[in-house]
Image (cartoon, rainbow, N blue to C red; front, side, top):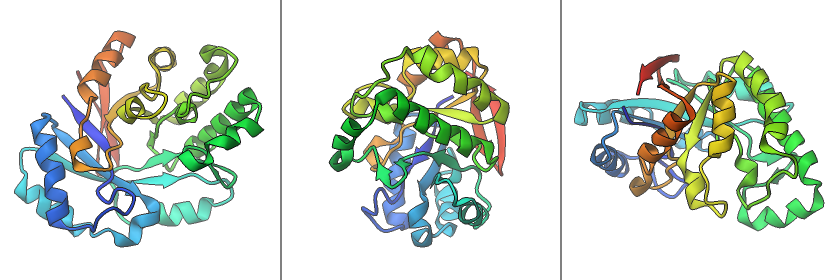
Length: 253
């Protein structure tokens, strides 16, 4: 079964939220044999979303399950604001992502020079601590792009195991799902999030997974999720998570 739970209908406010704009996303999803698609726009565009459109879209495309989510940026100290966003709609699921360290949007191309200001291992510690904080809130069933910090090629000096293992067990205790985000193959790092080596560690830590493309345009929907699934199977996974009505289910693959 192929799914994609990280699709941005609005992109980065590239387009209006309309049935006309949504239809191409479903056409590509069917072309790539997806059984479920999850729309999860950035929370900063929440007021631009018309959730009734997804009901209309489901009627037009009965052969694919349409799920409604949201990608929420985690910021320390803004828990009440995040809770308000989280409860603003009966989402099927939400993605918790860390894109910011303090006010630094570290995955923005125009901000990449700021990596030079950090000891890279200290930066990974800071980033992963934020990921754990996000997971511990209990607000996010799905954690986005686990090793996003590597986007421009800035890898830890320590081994992947030494860097991540102290955090993976803590993540497992929270019950969160980790996404296999294929967008990493189209970033400077040219690597799946999480990397295959890290994915194997996730499997050893009993962390469940699902599939996502992080599509910001229709032609990116479901991109390489079959390839990601093959890598997951090689790591030992036999199930992936699916989402609906605020619940997580697991299916054999």
